[in-house]
Every structure is written in C-alpha cells, then in structure tokens.
Image 1 (tube, rainbow, N blue to C red):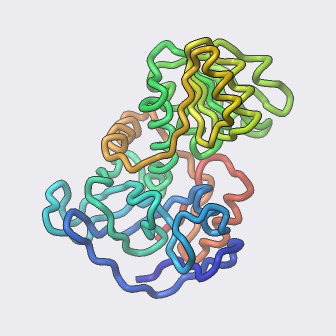
Image 2 (tube, one colour):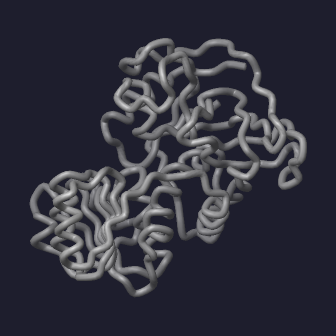
Length: 308
C-alpha cells in the first residue's frame, strides 16, 4: 500500500509517500480501505516533535478515517465487507490513517453517515468526538442552558456550536472578524469578535464554557460562568484557576478525547438529520500531505482532509 511516512520530526516537508506493507486485521479488527483521512492540529504537533505521542519516527500519522471495509478479523460481526465506516481508531496510539489501508478495532468504528461523502466523514471523528464528549459527557449540557464556545470557526469549535444547538442550548461563540458570518451560519445565537471585544466583559452567566486555549484564557472564562457551572478545558488548567473555580463551586473538567463508538453513532445520526455538518476548507490528495499540513497551519475555517 501507499502511505505517508516520516523518518524524522520537523516541518511539513518531512512527510513523503512510500510503499509500506499492507496491514492485516487481528481478531476483533477490520481492515479499512481508506477513502479519506482527516488532519487535526495534534497531527502537526506530533509531526513536529512537540507532542511525542508516537515516540521516535518512522511512523504513519493520521487518526480520522473514512472508507470501506476490505476484510474482517476473526470474531467481527458488526460489519461486513463493503460497508462504509468512519472513526478515530486507537487514539492516542498509532492508527496509520494517512494510508490506502488501515486496520482498526471494530468497536471503534461506526457506519458512515449516509448524507455526506467520505471526505466530509473523515473530517468528523476526532473534532466532533472532542466536541461531543466535552459538551455532553464532561459538561452534561442540557436544553435551555447557556454555552460559550471559544474559537467557533475552528475544527472542534464549528462542530461544537452545532452540537450545542442540537441539544437545545443558547450558544455564544468567539471568532475572528473574517469568520463571524460563518459562525452565525452555524446557528450561534451570538458571536463575539474577540479582536474588538473582551468576552469576559460582554458575556456572562453561562452554564458551560468549552475552552481550547488554557492559561489566562481559562482563568478569564471563569468570570463568565455562573456559580456551579462547568469549565471544560482541552488543555491543562492552572492550579490557581482550579482553586478559584472551587471557591464558586465551578466544576473544572480537563478532557482528552477517546475512541467512542456510541458517540460516533450519535454524531452520524445528527449528520443524517441535517443537524450537524462538517465544513471542509480544502481537500488534498495523499501525496500532498505536506502541503495539507502547511495549509492547516494558516488556521482555515473548519477542517482539512486528505483524499486517498
């Protein structure tokens, strides 16, 4: 099979396509003929050596995949050859998604949403599961509550806005000036231009804040939460921030996304019900993975994918 490999950490130019041995599904796994692979910020951090999840190269990046079942390992009954599936297998271990073939645990995949193609399905798993697990599993978001979602045009943020609206929440989001209209189009009730307004001064009384930046940003987010609210952070939270939260009975949840078949099923249901739509900023062929990583670094709206 062809796969995107790197033999050293570094910039996007360390990624290259090479022939690799075809993987074989072990018991409980399926072999997926990958049609598209999503790219996430964590991919760039691992590629550059800033987040050594996979140890030393060589390795094959990629966790988000969408494709067709090519073979079944022993004991797999949930799928058959030819089924369209998507998922985020093995995270944070190597899944090898940037390839023509990938083996994956069957219980970490779900049927691809029928309403979208493989490129859009590959844009979903890691970002949408992060949003889903953050808002629902960790945050317990309920209908009628108020949610503040930072970076509403980003990979996680644009999906989180839609998921929160589908849950019946009142949603406020922050974005840069050129992305305000996009976030409004997702259904956000209010959008704050963070270059002109301090969100901590203009918004308040939230039940939940989804916080992707950490540091001072997490501390400032406490100011807009009601007593007893929830701060869900995608990064580590300072001990001083945790102490300030405890004084007001604010629950701080530091989350890391995990494979979640039940979550994928629910997200696919939302997609097919036209309540959730991943935005693909640009799709690149597999042999342009380096260019795709460089494009992602420009912080486009939504997601970037590789087509295989």
